[in-house]
Image (cartoon, rainbow over all chains, first blue to last red; front, side, top):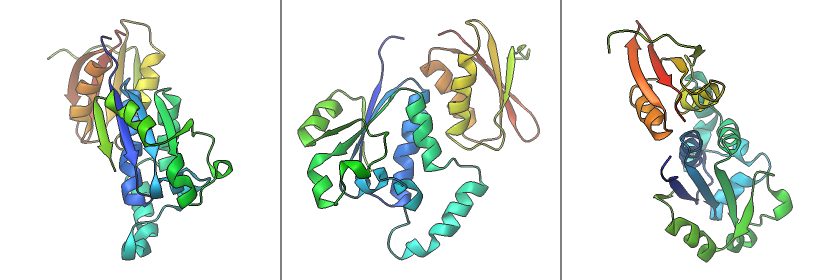
Length: 139
Length: 80
């Protein structure tokens, strides 16, 4: 193939509604031979903690409806976030970065994180990656 | 596209929602030789757009969609 397309996403939110789309896109991109870089920052870091994806809730008062939403996700046949992450990793096209600057703020330590995290960097590092991407998103 | 292609392998993705049919198809097509044809059965409404675009994007050839009553058959020839 001529040139490999790249996608860079800032994952800023830790709630279920905002965590799903980047993972779906990452999985689809991985299967479409695109390289994906996900930069988890602020509340997004909470998703990288062990069991973080499983514990993600809907935001605000909708939090109460999280169980119902998870039930519906399963019922209509949408993959779990863990499955999407695994599939994206499996494609060999996904690289996950944790934002070092906000790790202290969110009280997230390296040893809390899932082994799928590939690296740690700050804003300038991720901007360097995003500058070469064809698709840049902030979720 | 009138003649239905003869597939070397059929993968049943019915019941799976986006993006899983594509993810599974990616794995399936990797098991074929170049020039062989994968048939995917899918009832995901997004597949109508997803499969032709995904096939092109991954350097393969999309051969066509054949509608059944409540799903569709997608044929992709492995090129890459």
